Length: 287
Length: 318
Image 1 (tube, rainbow over the protein chains, first blue to last red):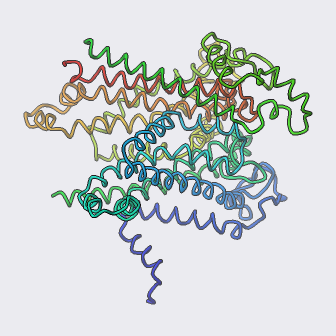
Image 2 (spheres, chains in turn brown, red):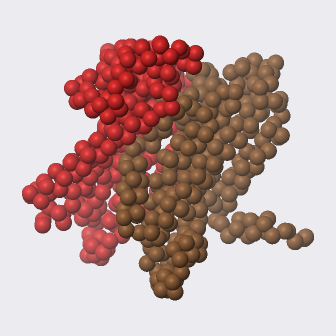
Image 3 (tube, each protein chain N blue to C red):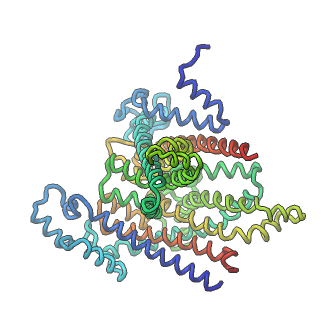
């Protein structure tokens, strides 16, 4: 067998190290990310192409998942919609995780009053219920893609901050950090070289969770008609626009919702297997 | 209950009120830092400066912001919630019946879901690792991980379209008779219960397992006590606080769930009003709804904290 280049090889090794549920989760997640990138090229029809089949048509060989309320191919719309659902959520989750981590890092390293102020502010954000807060933001600023990304990021940043803060405080008390301080290293060096590298792994697992939450929130907003606006459509909008077919039992409502479900459950499986694997390692270390 | 516990509860309520004040300020000032104020938004881009100025005067937007905040607060306390920008009807008349409808839906769901979730959570904690527990674990994890509208649409597909047990469009039915009431409420309540119960079961199970791992339970087991006795008399006494806490926190998922469920079943509740107001950018209604839902949320958190304090034996004895 030809040797694979480095990145796929590392991925393959990572795949082998996971339990079965984690492997399933990884495959599903990667598949959806691939579709988000190349979905519009894979799609058998155009996003707006109206077929000559009737509206809410059943699945057939020409239209794999049936047609929507205007007689458009549902399979195509789900493939293309993946870009908005996954793209927006990835952007928002990255923003939330990175901001939360950096802020927690700064708060810990600078310490005292700065830490106190930032932590209290984050607490204030944390007590406002997330969906309600998102609706308020959209009522005030209107719904557009930047507003959606920012809203989701601001809503889920406090959670990331809390996790990162707990990590950073623990690491900050470690002896090697104290040694670095006594060596006279600057706080930037301590933050970026001593503490941050050890926070990356737990924050990656947390990032997966944030991603799932944000997918659910954004699709919920789109379902209410307050998220991604036409002519663009993410999976939540697809559910909304086909809602009239629900009471006739059309699959057009359930399919986009199932797409969301496979993605979120897949990601959850992957994260679960990652965190439980780490727990085993910790236990081995203790015994 | 002693004076120390009472003092702690009093302090917690004080903190709650303070939080509420902060939240109200957050809501008000966020919505007043608009680029181009509400009058501009209501009239659109093409409005002349004169009409905008007139509307600003009518809404009272020409007053200083701080003064408007305090008069808004005073209005909230006296039951005057302002006037809708979109329809010029007082907010109070718009939301009046709808609050009752939403609270109705939420309380029926609570009454159904809490006992079932308790039993399921306890059973799966006792028989943890068994096949039943694993199935329940996967089930609750899936319900938490999928969007609420998937649960709702699957329920409609199954019970209304395939089985014809309930009418699909529930709120055309009259709710005066028992049968009509059951038909109208069963589907929305079922969906809400699914969403909330998944959370509750997970949290109850986690709280109880935490206790079952402790030394005194091991001691009781070694003494040869029956499992039922250990759980009901030994572990339960310590776990009531965390479980009630978990219940109150999971009920906050009702707030998110109720918005989706009301929309999908076109239920005439506060959440549908809220969503309409958000898409019309009708700020007085939005502000009221946000405040109302925040108050509910804070009340649940407060309740959770108070139960934790009351049921903590360490605090009771000291």
